[in-house]
Amino acid sequence: MKGKTFLILLVATGLLLALWFFRFGDDEPTGKVKMGDKLFADLPVNAVTTVAIADSENRVVLTKGDKVWQVDGRSGYPADFDQLRELVVKLSRLKIGRSFPASAESLTRLSLMAPSTTDTSSTGKQITLTDASGKILADVILGQSRETDSGEGGGQYLKKVDADTVFLVDGSFRFLKTEPAEWLNKEILDVKAEEVKSITCYIDDPVAPIYTLLRPDRGELAKMTPVPPGRTADPAKIDQVFDALAPLTLDDVKAADGPPPVPESGKPRLVYQLHDGRQISIFPYSDNKERFTLRVTAEDSTAETQAAVAPDPQPMDEKTQAEEMATPTPKTARQLNEELNPWVFSIKKWQFDSFITQPESLLEEVKKDGEGTS
Picture 1 (cartoon, rainbow, N blue to C red):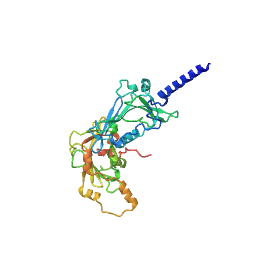
Picture 2: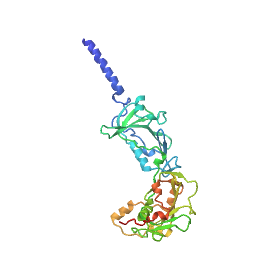
Picture 3: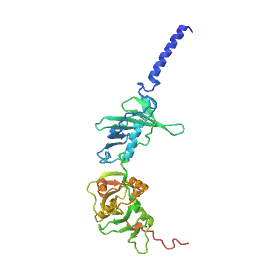
Picture 4: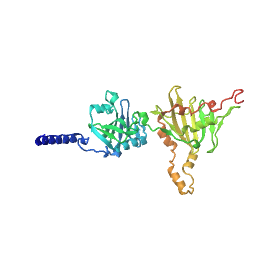
């Protein structure tokens, strides 16, 4: 080959290599991102006031209220703030593993099409963060997760809605929820059994109970009254009723149509009297099919509550002081009513079954003649 021809080929090859590097060498054409960079390094986390999450079937919007984050579509019921905070913080800390130009093929293959796309087989999940003025702070579509050869998580593909670049990031949102009910603050109450002094159940008469379970002091065995002659109370069933509030969690919630329930003839009511003076009433209801709901009210026994809230000062060592500071102050009846009165809570059947309203169900089975003998 002549020297002149070789020189021409060498120059041409160099130009092609330079062009290729400019187009693909840094993956991101503008050169603004690099491996290891944070994808949302400038995300103002504290300015976020709305988080919207959607897939092809569901959409949930979480809004920052005056006091707490709320779930739209559930009349503003409080959201699970820990779950929400984890999502936003994880998004702000995502680091780029690699990036490449988006194409119709890659968006379909990696499930990075917008949830509104007709072909739902190629759609991802979309997260949109906005501030109080409605300005979009982040808007991304989450695609497929990447697995390593060992089967472990290797990050997730995502795409900014307003850009044409696909990123592989080090975080994973594989189990991100999109239904409103899944973002509710699940805990209704959390009252440990040892804090319950007595439980009284009413049905036919709003004043005369059908049974009472009494545990005068912490650590003592609870006793049932009345117990029919020749029968014995079942300790396991009694414990089940005492444990029903520890914790009591919801499946879903809706705004109540009217004021809190009051004791009425024919409507079951279980009254939990606590050692600290608070009294919590549970009104369970079932349609005998698949719907299990309840409402909650609370009252204070003034003398006992005041004594519990303002005990006589006692000297404490450093360990005891630390334990006291770490223990949250119980909510007053007024606070509980403000939080719980406006709602009808849907709960799981196994939790509903713990609110036993038939005395017979609290008794041990009657052994037939010959049972229990060899």
